[in-house]
Image 1 (cartoon, helix red, strand yellow):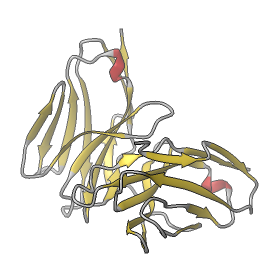
Image 2 (tube, rainbow over the protein chains, first blue to last red):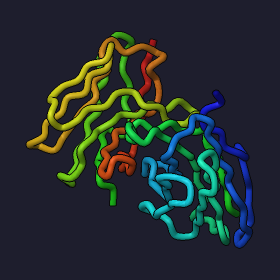
Image 3 (spheres, rainbow over the protein chains, first blue to last red):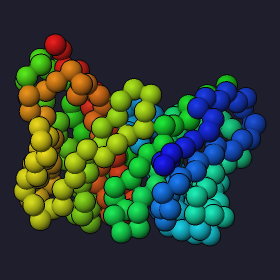
Image 4 (cartoon, rainbow over the protein chains, first blue to last red):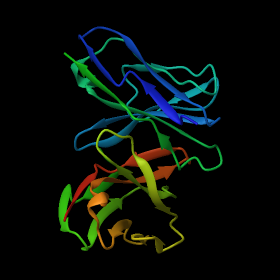
Length: 113
Length: 111
């Protein structure tokens, strides 16, 4: 199993550009989440999904969109990138029964200039 | 405003020493308290977790102590090794799948 995979590993965007961060898992997990990690802030929940077709907002959802058309994939879309979105983004997934044990991907480091 | 406050921000310990990281929370709805370990360039990985009906949990050299009345919990790393050098995050969950993380503690173990 590859676990949780994320692409790209690094990305530089200009202010106002849009892009999609990809996340996929091959563990048949129901729950998937997106977090951003900033120095001194820990990880903050952006959006999450409890299953295909079901998504909801986390702690810091503004400026981001998600969709979940399959169990495996959970892309994160930045609609109009801003410097405040410079961060490291992590995707995570977990079993429905033991949802607190989340498996994290390797992260995407995004810089917005 | 972070719901879980973690300290210290960083610590340095000699090989064989004890590392102690503390966390505090306010939301009494939290019902699960995991600790995650993160190495540079990697995603966090679950290290150990505890529920509030237990005061202590030990797995190998890692121990969580939990004080429900004080709303505090801590991670103790016994006999610290250079391979334990990493960033440690405490977290708390409600609604099972929503995690609130502390700010993280960078632990450096000197050989």
